[in-house]
Length: 176
Image 1 (cartoon, one colour):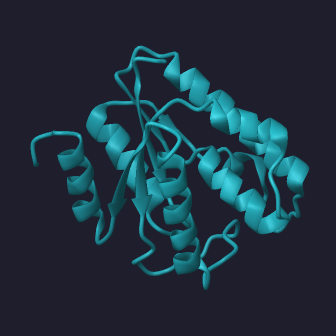
Image 2 (image 1 turned 60 degrees about the vertical axis):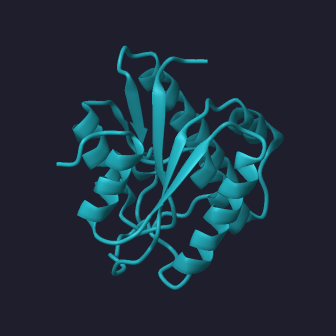
């Protein structure tokens, strides 16, 4: 296992993940692995399960590249858990190849963002009315994952400063 410590910011659409991931990476002076789907999909253009599978492998490759750095921390704006839920929601399944890739992920701290903020429209977002249902799905998936992998989960709510303070506290860092 890598000596890096991984923090993955996760949760449903428009729940503040990217903003929080960027702030955590800056706070820790750590590499930030962006959400690959934003580079591989175009607004208004359809996609299929094969496209999402390519996104998953590209996301895992970027994560592996960041983990090869000398940085103590690596911050992920998303990981295969998001892609897994996306695939299951959109296409009803998940391939054996992606399951193997998912199973090979190294342990991490998941920071689960509640969608307790206004929806921000974005051409790549699809489910403004489904955020709390999807949040419950993330909670269930993380609970299940915690039973089989050594992961940690921090659920965050409220404004950005409150969320960042919760991450700082969980990591044992002094408050600002």
